[in-house]
Structure formats: structure tokens, C-alpha cells
Image 1 (cartoon, rainbow, N blue to C red):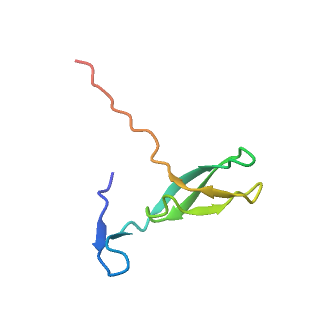
Image 2 (cartoon, rainbow, N blue to C red):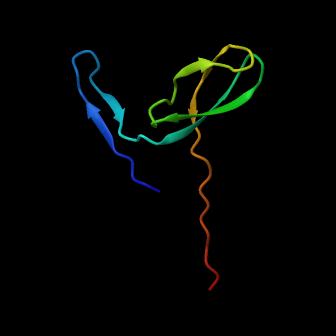
Length: 78
């Protein structure tokens, strides 16, 4: 897995703002509270966590969650 680089920018209006340095597709998931649809979407960058978009079925607003998947650790037999 490639290490992630994050640049932290400080401004007067927003004291701490994180800007992603990842330009690769990242999988985000969502679940619509209105219709129950579960969906996913690939977006460029890892800074879309918490953003809202419209559900593809009902049009209701949904919140994107980063879908990091599952990490498996394999133990060798000794």
C-alpha cells in the first residue's frame, strides 16, 4: 500500500485545512436513509469523506463514507 501524503494549510478563515495529495481513484460508499439503497462511487482523491451527493434512486441527500475495505493478515505455518 502506498503511503499517503497530506498537506496542512493554515488560513485566517479556516485555521486547519487538509488537502489530499492522492490523485488516484478512491472508493466511497453511502446508504440512503430515504429508500435504503446502498451505493458506491469512485472519486479521485481521498478528501471526499463526509461530502453529500444525491442518491441515484431517490435523489435524497446521502453522505459519502470512505470504504477502506478489509485488511487480511496471513500467518505462515511453522
